[in-house]
Length: 431
Ligand SMILES: [Fe+2]
Figure 1 (spheres, rainbow, N blue to C red):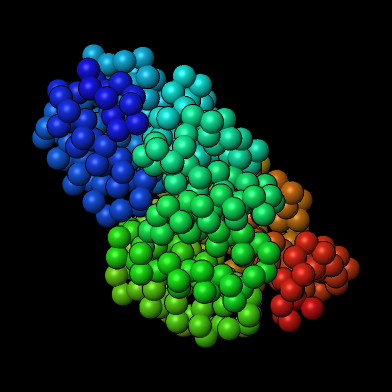
Figure 2 (cartoon, protein in one colour; figure 1 turned 180 degrees about the vertical axis):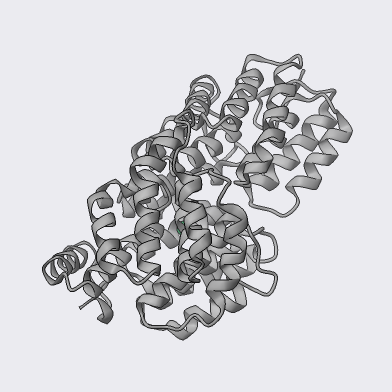
């Protein structure tokens, strides 16, 4: 029995195997580009390490690709069949549940692990991720609060936990404390992209656009060459700050040069970033050129994944705005009639499908229908998960639809509501 770097018991052939697994986990926590190869090295050290199989399963699931679910399930099954500690077997069970679509069951497993092992940073990060995509804001905040008493500066990875705590607080509107935790995390490690991101969210929600641009730029040298696709999301945030200053050209430059580059990818978050930005630019009257079509090509390959409806809404935006009515219809059909087994199924039925129909209507030039579909579910949109900043694009859509449909009373009310929430968040096009 070996120990990991935080002192948790690890079933491994020896200290070398434990160290190799620690290295893969570290890179994952840092959003690094080497987690896959490092995990391969860990397998070469010990092919029967249960947590290596667990981690591989998690990596497959975190890619958000439906076709990888069976491989994740296999990893969970393999880990479950190996000699392991109860904690490791609980991880194997969580991966299996998640791979089967029972993400609620998986997150309960992670929270249960954390009651006994509050320094299990993989469980902390995965609970953080799943609460986020469940729209479970209170759980997202409280999950990290429960484990923090077991952490301090002497425990490796402390900064990551502070950064997650920061994001949970931010999404609950506790901006001052969120910024404090986030800045402490970045002071420990300025290349910690998730913590840089937590502070960027505070600045976004408080309308501190100039500061936000400086914040992302100031830390960029530390994370830019180290971080995988998540760096695109930080540049997306930078583009949001530019939009708040009505600097559409700068936002579009970031789109082309930083987060939707020539090597445009089909990564779920990359597509979400891009579709969200193009919609926001569309509302501002910016012509997307051929960008919607490029995005729609990737979205079309992904909409049968059925992972979280949050992603589907962005795929739908790409297809609908590119005018690809055949694929819009196919996508709506793929979302309807789900089995009801997976945690996400109810969210698809209650929120995802009405939202996607609304987006399709908007793309088809039917703003009245878009408004009528979207308005009744507007207070349920949080169930999609994602951040307030990300979901804001759907509120902008509602306002745009109201305005184009001549629903002046509703438009006025929505704009007033928005202005009360965040002064300065009402651009000229909304009036
Ligand atoms: Fe974000």
